[in-house]
Amino acid sequence: MSDMDLEDADGTMRDGDLALVGELHRSVEAAKRAIELRIVGQAEIIDYLLIALFSNAHALFVGVPGLAKTLLIHTLAEVLDLNFNRIQFTPDLMPSDVTGTDVLEQDPDSGRRSFRFVKGPIFTNLLLADEINRTPPKTQAALLQAMQEGQVTASGTTHPIAEPFHVFATQNPIEQEGTYPLPEAQLDRFMFMLDVGYPSASEEVEIVRSTTGGERPPIPKTLSPERIIALQEVVRRVPAPENIVRYAVNLVRATRPESTSEHLSANLVQRVREYVSYGAGPRASQYLVLGAKARAAISGRPVANIEDVRKVAVPVLAHRIVTNFHAEASGVRAKDLVRAILEELRAK
Image: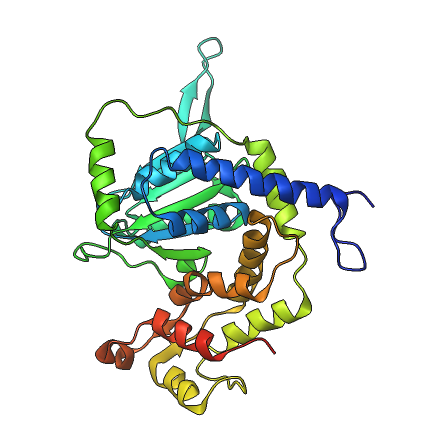
């Protein structure tokens, strides 16, 4: 059994993995400092973005135009030395514009013709799917296999996408005309849905000052794709005690209208039944535990705790809860219900 194996039988990590957790913590702190050279504010969004990346997962960012969502993701790719591609999703975008297509070529010597697959922009380390809800479902679905399986199938041939591979998508919440809401099956592929808010007054002053002046400082590279893969692997080996796993499962089950929870008040159980059509599925439990592990490792801690689960609960759960028309009429949002569940549900 090597240093890179799972935790020992006594539940503690081996020395090699502890060293990798320390490397991850130092690398993330260096990456944050590098990102801050270009991005003002958004500290919490940056934290979640890094948790998603080192969880080997995908994230969806929702915010009005001009909040530096694209710049943030591009800067992250630059800091981590990742190949970066951006796709502007539009109503006329075709699946082949995302995945690639076969082109007919003729050998100049023999005259024989054959098809060659030309890879699309999805073949990269970090893909920014900009305004993903502006393209029809057929094109949205082109991302599905790649996000889940890390590969693309075209003309019966499967083409693997090199690791690491992440899709960070953006949505504009204020323009709904001509948009195609993401189906629940595709939303479930995203670990987080993150609401990017307006900067504070002081941050906005600094944004204007820094973006209307002279040249920007160079951004240092803090990691390589190979080290990122190694650190993603050690995140999965961070121990999650039994009570952490059970707490995550209890959180998820509490979002389902057909389930009962002895940990919640009768009033909150009734609210869930009244306002929720469908609760979160098992993938939410997996992402809660994986996000807790990543948050612990990024913080330099070798074991996840309850607070780690609670910190990632809202962005993991809210977009997996399907509310009904009663909730819309009453102004009740999915994230409000998640926060109410968190308030009542404590570790047992």
